[in-house]
Image (cartoon, rainbow, N blue to C red; front, side, top):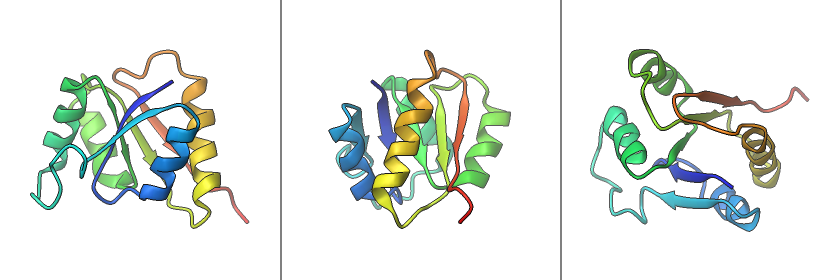
Length: 113
């Protein structure tokens, strides 16, 4: 299962569902890094130094970071979904198919309705 680092705006309900699926998810808040205005590149560095993959809704900025810092621990960018369980299921399915996430950018999008 994945070792993930959920950034500050990532929905906690999704984190709980991912934990129920067996993933090890650390939140920014649990790491003591909340409300510190830590730049995204340092969020990515913290995750990598803790052997975790960043989990974020901040698609634009983390796509840019993936291009500029290709040697990272992995990034999962998501489209927000009010159906938190469905979002967690899509993330779970996306990373089960990935053996190694180092340096990878995984995009999890909400299906069209």
